[in-house]
Length: 343
Image (cartoon, rainbow, N blue to C red; front, top):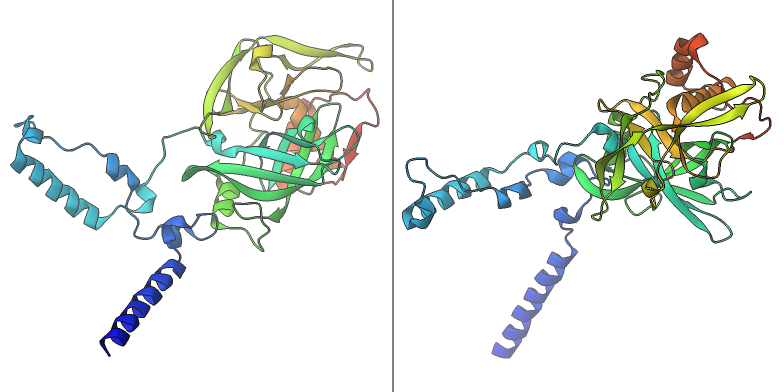
């Protein structure tokens, strides 16, 4: 009878162990899959693990005193029991445009693959370089976008995109969210909390200014670090990039040339901003050149206004911005017909 009792007790322990394995660990849930409140409720800040101990000014050597150490440990234990709200868990302060930056990954039916950067606008629109999307005469079979936000440094998949318009002359592409995905680029039926927050808070206003950029301007841009997160870097815009406009019969400035040591894996599609975070332009390759160049924001504004006028998109923020530009709107590559494709 005793042997059967031992077997029964072991069976109960094994069943409890299996049940524990089957219960999902909330620490492993992503903010992209559930609301922040549900995922983070009751969590204590990991920053507290690295918080310096408080030292009394009257007794700077208290760390070496056992009673002092016990007192500090007791105080931290009390703080830990109270916990810290997830809203108090802040990553280092970075410019908002860091979180407007996306990694665009394009795969083609011929097996080729391209990736670069893109910039989130409003209403699920992205602007990027045609070099990230166009591959000869082939358009991508799938386009995915990955981003990070100010709550989580991890780069996560946020959407599958579709092409709205592509202009090879200006080297620009306008993309639109087509399907929502989870953190691993698998389809999901609706936006997650994480995605919704990014779209609402980090869309860049590329119409914020249309003033021509002066030479020697310090331009700030996102750089992908060794930790696979975006950090801030800068360069000087010195030499104008121009082409000859046969209709206007003059040289037309459309951006800036950059030093070749600025070319990196994620050169194409990278956006630039001034010291105040105002959008300046992106890196691409215009149809008149062979090397990456800085495409001025005026070219991008003209491109978006053109897409709106052709009713490819119906966005109030583009329509009102183009109306405000009025006669200040500049036209580019108008002497090169038939190179803009719309979808």
